[in-house]
Amino acid sequence: MAVFGVLHFMPASGAGGNFWGFLAMFLLLFLTTGIGNGSTFRMIPVIFLTERQREAAGADPAQVRRDAAKESAAVLASARRWRPMAPSSCRRATAPRLH
Image (cartoon, rainbow, N blue to C red; front, side, top):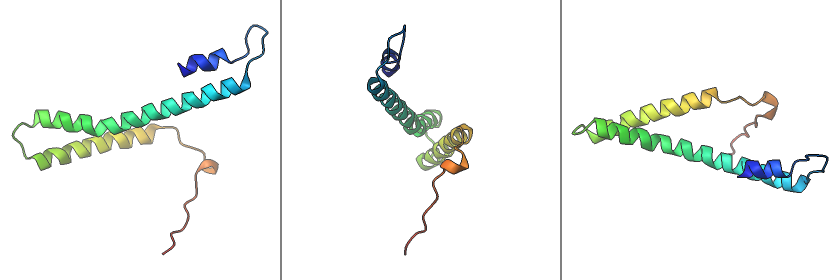
């Protein structure tokens, strides 16, 4: 829906666009894609735990949870590895910890 809002506020057919409408729709687009991405990453461990529990009927529940945690961690780590890396100038420096 936000994509159509972005397109609606762009200049077209000789008519000027609306910058504030475009900006609002673009911010909404980024917000909704971020929420969707976060929801997906939160579902991954639940999905792997459910699969492991189905496959391991009668097995040790603690071992099933460990296996699901390892598998979901591997998937999340590979997803993190393949995302585009930010340039070094955009990375936030870590502040020293005060004790």
